[in-house]
Length: 204
Image 1 (cartoon, rainbow, N blue to C red):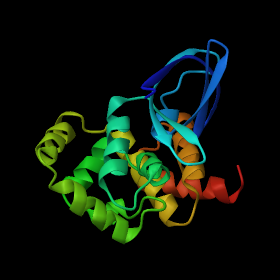
Image 2 (cartoon, helix red, strand yellow):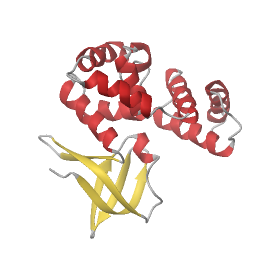
Image 3 (cartoon, helix red, strand yellow):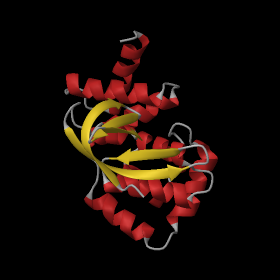
Image 4 (cartoon, rainbow, N blue to C red):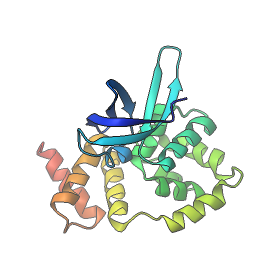
């Protein structure tokens, strides 16, 4: 099992990164949450990994935090019908703390807004994860002590709203993040959505 790779970041996209380790390039499939935490191209980086073995390929998934990898493994190993691709979509569509809170509170509506999930899968996630031994208590404590910032919460809500309107997850995330960086005075999710819609409609 490959548990992490450490080297130089040579390429990065919202869905994948390449890390050069002593002349060997490792391609890692990553969630958007990890993409935001990557250093600049050419800088040293250590990425936690999960190796998924298929009949036709060995695929390496990368994460910038233990919480992300733990959630990825929990979904893949414990929820029927969820494979690595859908588990990445969950991590890309909602922060770990928000996801845990949604499961604990049986918030199927929020979970089903994640791209590719759907109501039935969201219900299955709640059913199969909520009552696992010790998970609920740990998640409630984690949600209380590691609550997302107001900015992160508004960004997540804006991205989910754009996805619900039919925009691609990667495009919605990129546009919202760019707006928050260039126009920090914009605080609410509603304002972010309005500005993002104008920008995306204009093709900028």
